[in-house]
Image 1 (tube, rainbow, N blue to C red):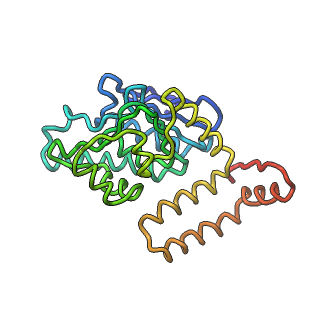
Image 2 (image 1 turned 180 degrees about the vertical axis):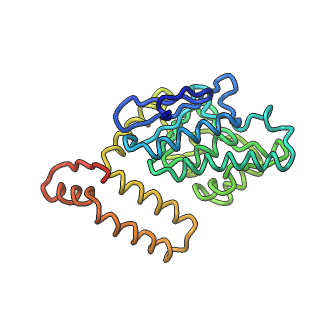
Image 3 (image 1 turned 30 degrees about the horizontal axis):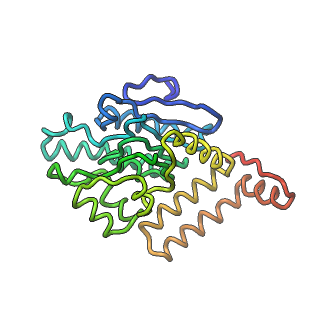
Length: 265
């Protein structure tokens, strides 16, 4: 059965317009707290988007009250060390499926984005946040610290000292602060979050899927490679695109003064 035909317990999927896929986290009574079922279902859906040739851009959202409020403490608080490690294996599998997805991912954030919820946002390529959203990594107050990539992705998006400030204190911060420290792309009124996300997704849908995929990978690799290795990887990916129909279409369209029609081939 295709992922499109399945009914999920903790997630909703929709395809409101061509090319745009929406994953909605759907545990509203728990403020979309992350449990194993949500991890497994969101991974399956994101993998479906990853492999689906009709999907060109992905929006990940929660509801008006919460994007996601971190790990479900009722499910994890009695873990022993090995169970905790197994849980994080599932967390990282899902988060990396977002980060490494061939399709660009847009986080549409309303309400709370705390702990693992914020860490999921940090794995997205573009982050659009409501002006009344509340963000934070409060795990330090539970005797632990962020374990879903927060210690790695926060300083890569902002700075190491700002990351330490919020990871060490567990303090919440507002959307304006998130924008100021470089953690999100844009802050908009709460009622405009999804419209803004859709508008951005439509823009991405008009680009070459192949070029977007390679550009995303090159930028992600820049976080882990020295500049010479990164530029060499960029060179190989850039050159490879010259074997694509999209490159021929894009350059021909420019020379003919018309809009390109990219097919992802």
